[in-house]
Image (cartoon, rainbow, N blue to C red; front, side, top):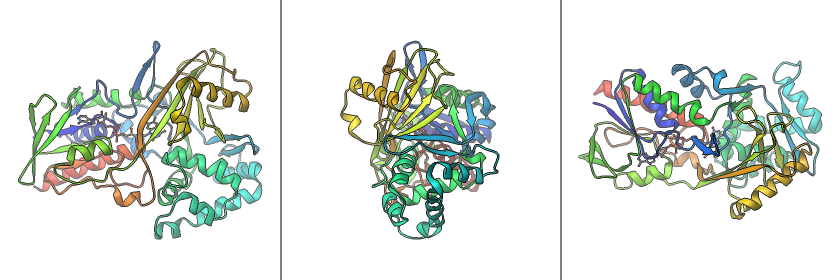
Length: 428
Ligand SMILES: Cc1cc2nc3c(=O)[nH]c(=O)nc-3n(C[C@H](O)[C@H](O)[C@H](O)COP(=O)(O)OP(=O)(O)OC[C@H]3O[C@@H](n4cnc5c(N)ncnc54)[C@H](O)[C@@H]3O)c2cc1C
């Protein structure tokens, strides 16, 4: 019988692709008008942009694998760049995190780091890295407690660890889980040069995976229905029966994968299973359209001590277009769009004087529930994909894995969930 998938974000789509590839029939329903969920296309003026700037890295193996499976060349959807980040701060000189140069990895990274922080900067990073096994074997603590116990300098905390923690966990260091941060560092910087490559989407997000995934699913006999909302999951005697939709009609199914966000999943399953509803934190992206000839010195750069955290040059998509990312909760949430744009433009101009003081057009997208808050002990709150109810499966970025809320975690879980479902079906 056809497996019903509720939710057409990247995780639900990954589950659907994996099942159809194995010849298993699927029907994916999505409540929105389009696929993609928290990584989707948005219209602005006459162009298509992202609902929020995303950055992937070379360590996103599951994402790259599934793109290959559906016939997408990664070079057609990403700019793949060797790690090369400069983080500007008003108090300290620019900090370089870069694998460029003639030395082999990781010496190139170490050499570039020493050139901006001195030998003591590198010693601190190595000290932190050496603590990871012990940290993971002990109770979880906050990232800031870990940094303090490892005697990281104020400069490194401000100009390196805080921005990296916000970018990857979307959670401030005084709340963020040191365990998850440690795993992120192992995956991104501990797995060789290619794993640390930056993959900047070269196309709007919906065109990177969701559209191609939908085409693949349909070509392999699967069905996709948009603007269909699952209102209730029907369960009798511990077995899944189907769902009731918004219009009270029923779709029968003996396998259902719930692939919604964590809070939507907890609400939908509340009558049957009690799931933890994590806090969900915002990400704000400010799109700034400058004159066509305006460019950043590098495709992306960081800023600390400012509201603006990361700036991406999206000129390949639209000449002069920049995307400024502000992760996690903060004072910017209370600011009007106009004040926010003004402040962000001012900060950019102060750090990179070649950019004009004002943009020609601007567009602010505030995703209020962008990711689950990756707080201390979050690992214990994440459910597994298999539930106690026969035929009820869970996927999505919150389902247990080593990653914070990411595209890679969402896809990894979608694939695992599909494989477990197939294996269980074979055993029945
Ligand atoms: C602004 C922003 C920036 C981000 N930056 C990055 C980044 O740089 N790198 C990175 O890796 N990750 C980033 N993320 C996180 C990443 O986008 C998410 O982790 C990922 O998209 C989650 O996918 P998902 O499929 O698990 O969930 P979702 O995308 O939330 O998909 C769930 C889908 O289910 C649908 N749905 C919900 N309820 C129902 C229902 N009852 N019936 C039918 N359908 C339903 C929803 O409409 C949605 O489409 C960012 C997220 C945001 C918002």
